[in-house]
Image (tube, rainbow, N blue to C red; front, side, top):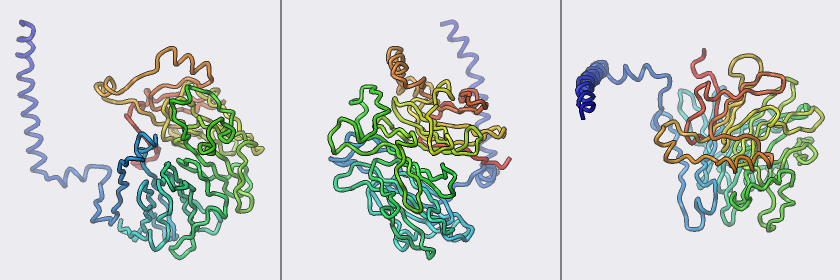
Length: 410
């Protein structure tokens, strides 16, 4: 009791001082005005009345379609930004899970016009996810590739490709390019992996097999079509498609790309990690499957080499980005996970794997994975050093996307 009285005696004037400082600060803020405060911020939030962008990805639980019937029910949609009409202004495409996708044309001065219906880019599939703007036919105009997922009855999940007609209209031609993939596609990346002058495609499909049914089964080498599952569950698996004169050909097996149903891919990132001028691929996988780092062998093939390049990775890997954070000429990799910042939330929501499970996963070739964001610093010689805690970016709670950029132009 004596110690509590001493503590209270000490804290009381401190609390009074804190209140006085707070009141004084509030008075100062009011005297200066809120505009003065807002001018000191790096970013300004633009409202709908200013930008004329009105978009909500509304999610509604239904009896036959919800988080219990579809694991990625709350994963969200995607956004792509690009200049579709070559006027020097960036336009915005947003995907919707239940509703129509939207294309907003930049009119200048941060004013946008919804041209989705007139441009014919709303899409005819449910549950759109990732989206990429890319000039697939080399006509100098950006086309739009939309990934589709979900398991909604009556929807075939086929991805859509909107070819730019050059007059603010688009024509859907995914099947003509053999890009109408019907797996549970999370995202897609377009890059010239074989250096033949045209863009190839990596299709990232998230497994639709219930995680609990797999029991940490390592069937990474078995392609999705060869699994012993009902016919309705076959298909899926990541795919690498080579561009052969405008038609995309599946070369996944020959190229060494895993197409297994234990691939829970949520992010695909492309960059040259070993500075041989050929693009390599980083795949961030959710749940127990390890991330993939595909090193380009410069002969049309890749070798997956994550264990040799990293000492450990994130566990439930989600978004990823590849940029050179220290300007040493070598790209580094940032991957998001779910480790909470707040200590109370950490104790209330986080469960870590026991030693036996960890040892079992190591024995099954799943590598060292820990619940944290990972920042892989490229130190050269085929090695990364993981520095997320050192860099202060290891804990950002449940984080989906990752983007590394120079926000203050320094």
